[in-house]
Length: 142
Ligand code: RTP
Ligand code: MG
Image 1: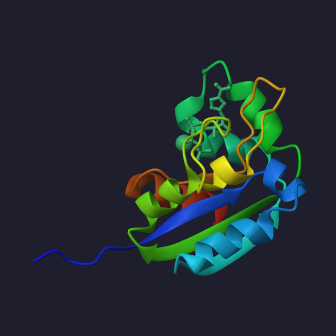
Image 2 (image 1 turned 30 degrees about the horizontal axis):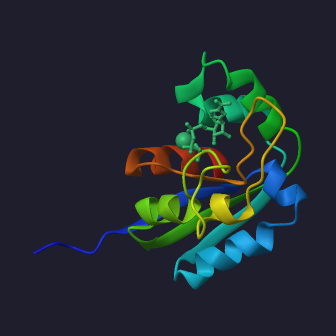
């Protein structure tokens, strides 16, 4: 018998999403899907926080641009709970590049083409249970 995996994931509404006033739209999609908002905060993240969050990307060509983008303004961080929410939210989000993300996804419906080398794609969602635990501890430190 398989158990029902109730998970928690970290969702970020990135500076482009907050600036474009898409916070309510993204949170509404999360709630409409039946996921629960457990905690919410808004902050402009420091480079130090972002370096910890994006550890896996350190040294990649887009890393510096990513940090500059992510620290450019307020971000909304959400602790979201639900059955298989980690994979489920990634599927609501769509692939990284909004210009090719399919309609029906957050990035496909709301993302638009950008002119900077850094991909602007509105949201982040943890990609595994290990990432979710690690990232939630970073963004929602007690
Ligand atoms: P995220 O971590 O933000 O949920 O996005 P993701 O898994 O779809 O993408 P990931 O490969 O983890 O990359 C993290 C973020 O870095 C920016 N990026 N820019 N210019 C580029 O080639 C490039 N590649 C990645 C995006 O903002 C991406 O979401
Ligand atoms: Mg990622």
